Image 1: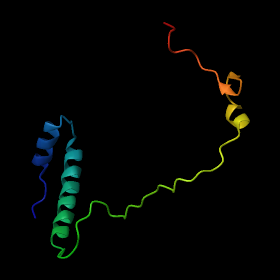
Image 2 (image 1 turned 45 degrees about the horizontal axis):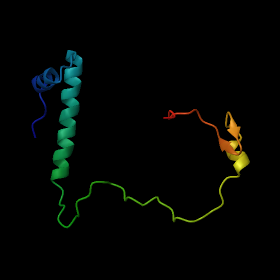
Image 3 (image 1 turned 180 degrees about the vertical axis):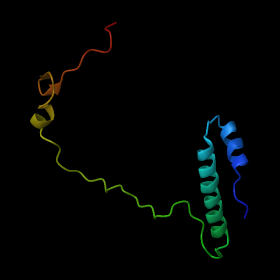
Image 4 (image 1 turned 135 degrees about the vertical axis):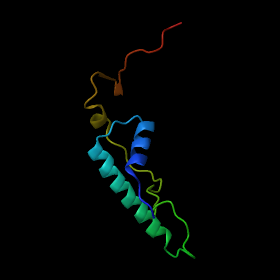
Length: 98
């Protein structure tokens, strides 16, 4: 498979409005060529009977069963409240009286 030429890298860089040095152009051409070669090797594999997948690792549901459990004590919840009032949070008024 043909690699990526420095001219192709310069063309893509120009389209992306990237300014690359000659050294970067050469390096990216080499790296992109390596990537295309690796992809071409993958294309040679026999994947007959292999189901397509989007994730290399199996996904697991991380939800837990919904169960009733004791809540945090009210004193602990209000411990860092700036202005607790009658065992509740006091907050600034946000709705004007009409």
